[in-house]
Image (cartoon, rainbow, N blue to C red; front, side, top):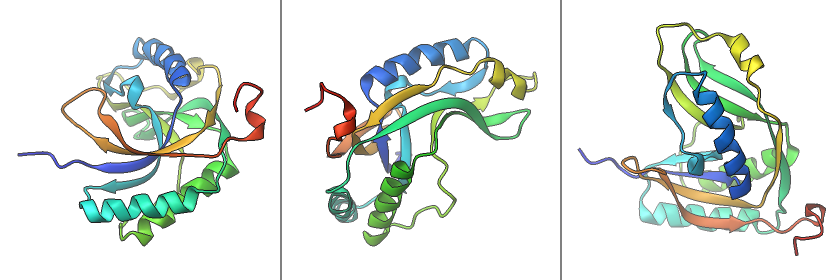
Length: 195
């Protein structure tokens, strides 16, 4: 049976940050026997998961998101700490946390509303920004939450400069390909080198 392509909007994580996270993930792999680890090129923060989409509806979402973000600036984000979803003794997801960010929440709300205006039915769960690192605990030994505390990576700060519409390719690695990119305006807080 052929897999349908799925789409989602996400904050793109810059290459240099992904490279640091790649090294952190390799360390975590030595301690945590999860079944599937996310390819470092696939790291992102999901804003709105669309699922399968017809071309016209996807085009409408791109237009709505582009309009919604046209005046939005880039913003700093901090990756800090690790967390899990699922059962405490056998989690289904290991993720990296992000520090609370009003700008991230605002961008997410705008993207979410734009997708709804394009006719997408989206999950109504509260937004919990995170970066998925691994899926499906794969050991007879129970997961110990205290291991998370012992293996906390150093915080990482990066500039959120673009929102990306990704499409999934389940049979290849990395799995996610940029379908459309929505650059955010440069912020004056980004430092001297960024014009």
